[in-house]
Figure: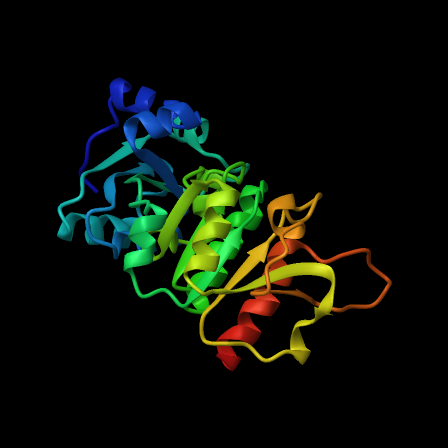
Amino acid sequence: MNFEYLSKTKLSQVRSLTSRKNREKLGLTIVEGEKNVVDTLQIESVIKFIIFNEDAETQLRPIFELAQSLKIPCFKLNNRDFKSISDTSTPQNALAIARFPKFLTLDELREKKIDRLLILDNLQDPGNVGALLRTAAAFEVDAIVATKGSAELTNPKVVRASAGTLWRLNLCANIEPEKLLAFLTESDFKILLADPSGESYFKREYPKRWALVLGNEGRGLSQVFTRGNFSSSARIAVKHSNSVDSLNVAIAGAIILAHLYNRT
C-alpha cells in the first residue's frame, strides 16, 4: 500500500488525545481496532484520518481501499510508534482520528420525537458506558443522557466499547440531574429507576414513553432521583440469587432494555 508515514506534528497531536482537555479543545477522539474503524467509516464525515501499523499492511488492505474510496487520508507508523498511541495492551493495527459527535441540549432533545430514553446517572467506568451505548443502539433507544460526573462519552475507552455506535445515537452529556428531572417530568416520561430494592422488572407493564435511569457502579442512584417524591417513577430490579452481591450495571441495563424493547 502506497501511503506516507504520519508526520511528527500529527503524531504529537494524536498522542495529545489521551487528555480529555485536548480532546475537547480539538473536538477529536480516537477509534481503535479494525472492526471499529470499518464501522465508523460507514458514517459520513466522522473520520478525519486513519493510521495503520506498517507491520500489518497486507491484512489491512481492505480497510485502506475502503478509506481511499471515501477519500479519507491514510498514514502509517512503525510498530514502536503505533504501540505508543494505542490504548490497548495488544494493539489492533488500525486506528482512526474521529470528529466528536453532535451533543444535544435538553431543549434540542425536547424538539425531537423521543419516547425511549436511557439515563446514565454518574456512571464512571468507561467500559460500562461504552457497552451501554452499544446496547442502547441494539434495542433502539432514542437518546442517551449522561449526567454531570459520568464518564466522558468521547473517552477512547468508551468509544472502543461502544463498537462504532457513538455516532448513531442522540446524545446529551454533562447534564445537571436537577435539570434532567425537571425535563423528564415536564415531558411526561415514566421514570424507571433501576434499584436492587425495587420490584422485578418482569412483573410490570410499561407505557410507550419511558426513561430508564441507571446509577453509579458503587453508590447507585443519585439523591435527586432517590429522594424525589414524584408519582411518575417506578423502582425496578433484575432479581437474582444470593450467590452474588449484585449485577454489573451494564449487564443489568442490557437485561432491562431487552425486555423494554420487546414489550413497548
